[in-house]
Image (cartoon, rainbow, N blue to C red; front, side, top):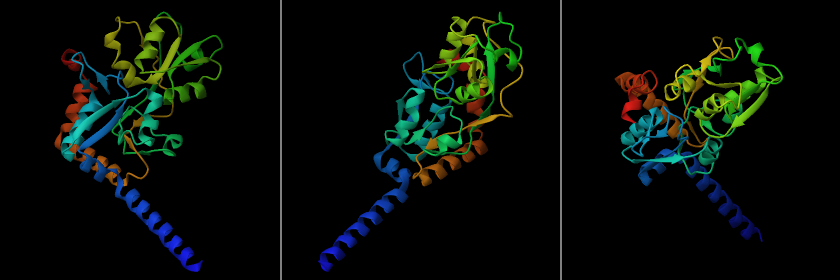
Length: 267
């Protein structure tokens, strides 16, 4: 019995050590062996990630992750998900990287590990020109409906700063909230200012206006994310961004996708 118990303990210990070795090996080695970098994005969220008029994935984060795949010497595989499917895709192992305009929060960080921020944005309130809303207090009233993106930081902030208003959550990209506003389904919306400003050229001129004062105490960072045990991949992504910031690739990406509109003609 003692001999059997001893061998059982040895087998259990061996299994634990093997599992630990697999865990600490991280995802980076697996990606290189597999020959594919699988990236979860929310398509329809231009200029971050979307399917263009040629039927190809395009956007700022598509270019960033294509650069990552090229640097790894592997193929980029883009996986499309709704916003609420992004984190589950990462946790289930379907994706190696989550590449979306996601704000790191303490709650999200319990499940996934965020890289260093790659850009900063600021939540804002937007409405139609024909409304009388000028301040947060004007929107935070009973009878006012505020559109937000399901599971987003904007949804959290709207509930925090506008407890008296009715919050209506939409599943999909931030464009959905702008469409709902213009169609009259909501009276105002909350989203990152950059996400709103970059889609406005797709709608009739002067159909949306942003309230001057932004929500929150400052700008919010956006970051990529990996699984908790993908430490070497997390380190590699941070190094990648330091490298492309130094060689000018980062600035070209931001200038093209975030600060200009030429991409609309190309894609």
